Every structure is written in structure tokens, then in C-alpha cells.
Image (cartoon, rainbow, N blue to C red; front, side, top):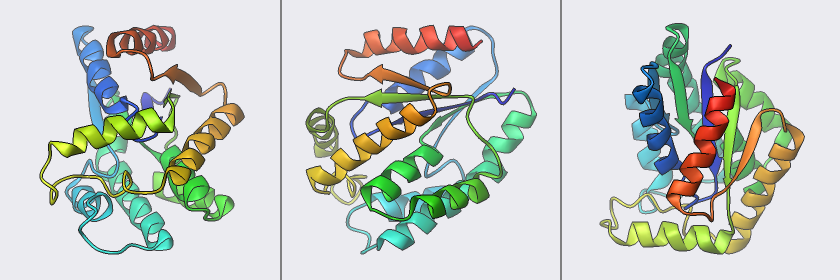
Length: 211
């Protein structure tokens, strides 16, 4: 079984916090675990992340954005994810292919079939055994994300997507829910409007079922 778990959701959904808490849960049980993030997870991925997420970097068209995410993923899978999985490590990934389908497909309106093909190519046939979708209203998510970004220097804030119109984020949320409905055996939808501890217990319940 692929020991690969992904965490997905709109901006401000709290998934990054839950990745860290899940990592702690695995370590407390003596299970080998690696927490990683997209775009990122490799030196190349971190450089691409800076380009993609920092608003002040440069103008990026939808097509270029899609290909940059795919490039970061291809390197991430080959250099970090696959080696860990081959060693029997549980890998927890903050965003993966579903994010590309939701953001660049549903959000940007790029061709979904092409995105599926590109995702398969860049992921090297790696697919998650479980995906947690942290769902909450766009209004709440953006308020959380913008509050978080407010305490960071503008040149360092990863807020390019937060600056998009609300309608863009609504399409992303609806896209995620559409993806989850199509693969109910893989997805677990978590109410991300709840407090951190409530969400943590819900995630751990599903992890225990998985193990």
C-alpha cells in the first residue's frame, strides 16, 4: 500500500497546521513519517514556490502557472516522495495533484482533461491512499489567510492567490467538492470551520481507520 496522504483545501483552511499535528501523531507512535509541501519539498521546488506564491515576483499567465506547478511536482516526486515511499515511510503532503485540478482547472478554467494527463505525468503514477479535504466558506478562509499574511513583510508574504477575486476562490472550493464527490473512497471531507483541536481529533480518527 502506498503510504501517501495528502491534505487539500482553499486558502486559510488550516491544512498546514493539521499536517504538522498529523506528523506528530505518527512520530508518537514510532512510525516513520515525512511531512512535505507543494510547491516545495526540493531546492528546485522552493525556487518555483517563491515565483508562484509571492505576489510581487512577476506576472504569470494561467498556462505558465500550470506548468510551473507540474515542474515542481515532478521534481518533488522523483527526489523526495518516491524515495521515502520506497523506504516504507508515511508521506504527508500539503497539496498535490488535486490542488492543480482545483486551482488551475476549476479556478483558472484550463482544460481538465489536459490537467489530468499532466498530473499523471508529473506525479510518476504516485497517488494518495487518502486525501483530507478541509472545507469551509471562502469568506472565512480568506479572512484567516489575510490575517496570517498581515504579520509578514510584503516581499516575503505568500499571498498571490489570496489577492484573487472571491469568485475565483468559490470556483476552487466547488472544484474540490466535485473532486471529492467523484472519489469518495479516497477523500475524507473535514469541517474546517471547527476549532483546531476538533479538527485534529477528526483527522486522527480517520488516520486510525486507515492504519
